[in-house]
Length: 378
Image 1 (cartoon, rainbow, N blue to C red):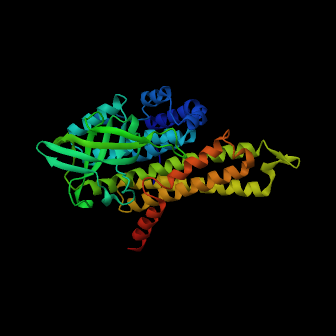
Image 2: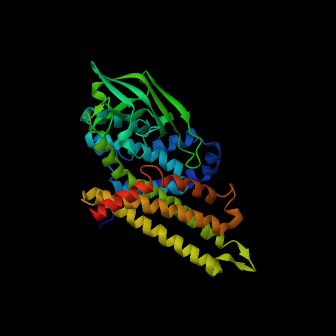
Image 3: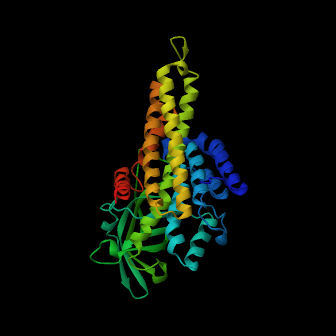
């Protein structure tokens, strides 16, 4: 496996690291408290290309591969996982268009991103989370297009999105055979933003309902064929899960570094706690799990890029292992810091809350284990 990257890619990764350290991290606790990312920071992310990571060269982008996108997401997550999620959500929404969109659709979508636009991936519903076949948002075919009715929930970037990659059912009876993808403009009549979630973690990312009420969209808004949506959802999530893994690695790395720094500052019984064997054992486990997660994430990206037949398996493993590792590492980091780690004035408490969602979204880790087991056994 060759994880080497070229000079242009390294410049973007270094830029992400600089933005994370100088622009994101100093704001992270305040953003976490308010639940709102300030416009200045969002502008910085747009101007630096962090919200356009998936734009191909032929459409004015950097043409980054999945491994580079993951490495950038990891750096951004060290500053704040919520901010990294805002950027990663644009890539998530891009993948179905990249896979099945025509040239006109790609140009419209990527022009929007290049001009500072945002997007969202609208699959989840109140009755359809892990079960994509339960999507009930209806796209009823009419002359010249479709009429949309239904509600999406827990949609990252929904309140700030200009474009919506929407999964709706074109069959009245529902089921995966009717699942179809549409590229929808946010300002289309009949679309409104519903309840915004007051979340436990990743609070920098705006998450809300999207409501479709007799919303007409033209036929050319459909991505691919009718009934192609389930396959596109699975292919998309196989590409995006290593990015979730990368964000998890960024969270774990930040918590680890904070705990190590604290261990060299905190004195008990007349000596630094870094000299205590039990603390050293905790740090050793944190380092090992973080590095193992990073290696698995990078391999999963590499396999996706090579089109390896086991890429889906490694995608599931990378997301599952890295998010579990992030939860364990952040929990241990709080333990190393004791009462100080439990305080809202310390970022390790935030890292722990941010890590939890990584085990849940883009396919719960219980679902990932089913995918892994089926791939391994059959």
